[in-house]
Image (cartoon, rainbow, N blue to C red):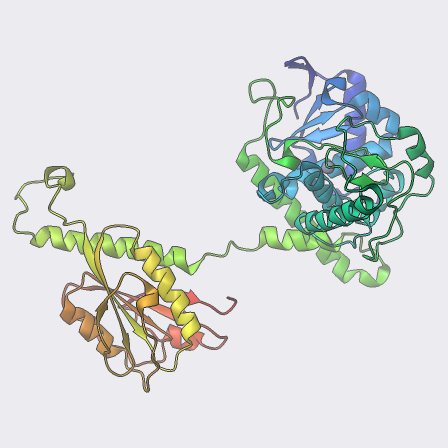
Length: 488
Ligand SMILES: [Zn+2]
């Protein structure tokens, strides 16, 4: 673990007192009962950096995407070991939950994004931390329920803000309270709330919690808040932007993307293990892992879902290459010597452009699915190197063959029985370079690879549970892609 301290733009070692304090809160943060033991892999890969008042009024903690955690030691030491340990856990979650990646253009109010991400985190803090971290924002602070994601809290804050504006607008003639940006709200009065904070009173969503009480903090957004947030700005891991006050790679050590992903999956595994143990010990009341993080871990560990479009794109690219090769070999204008970059010598030869035929199964199919699939398929093959695309429907017979540019030009007419063998025959006759057959797979198949130069791909649509058996019956000599629409 690096240990550095900032002074201007140069970083040096933490003082031994700071080092001891950091170790104490980190160990506490990974302890059973009082901490969140499963985030250990995240904690040990952090680089603590000591910072001072240059970070801003009331600054305590922040973290960047590269695992550097900025600590105003003087201030957090004053807040105490339990508070600081909770703060460290909080900063870990900003990285683990990847708030820096999740912020979209619509999350334009920086304060709201900051509070929304903090709410997502704080609902999961250990009880001991919650008990002392009274002046940070929880969902209940604003009357929201627990268990939601930052994106949801952001929307709720926007709604609430509009309500506030409407109300104060009525009283003060269109003068909603705008923040002065000084970050110095009515401190003295705010302290009065410390004894009885909003927490422990889960919000019922009624939208009339602490609001309107004296001592409200007011940030840049202009929204009234019940007290000043002691974790006001948690850095670039929270807001996703750049921050000139944060260290650069040259100034202080940083974690790589791989380090980040490794720590993230280790934490997810530890959470799942804890959840499994709790599952077997439930009767003894050991379960302390918040459901939200259990759900998060499940998602992190789930195998990445590969979209059928990507698979089809890959298969199509290979087929296209093979079709082009076939053409190159039979091209009479091709010189009889090795020519690795043929397009440079024959820019107009157009051997790199191919014709594609798409036959789709219109027999008793679900036309919504079909239209969606055709649009996507058309999109994939239009991305380059195609001269013509012909599309036609097949039930037991071939319908009109049309050259089309848009899927909306297609008329969908349902038919009777299904025999997609005629589709293969037709595509081979047309001598297209690539023939794509889209079907729900309930059809007889050719008994051998169709003759001719046409390369075939079967897009086998599986649209309901139980339809897999038809897909599995596609003969092996056909190149196939499963188009799974079961959870579309
Ligand atoms: Zn935060």
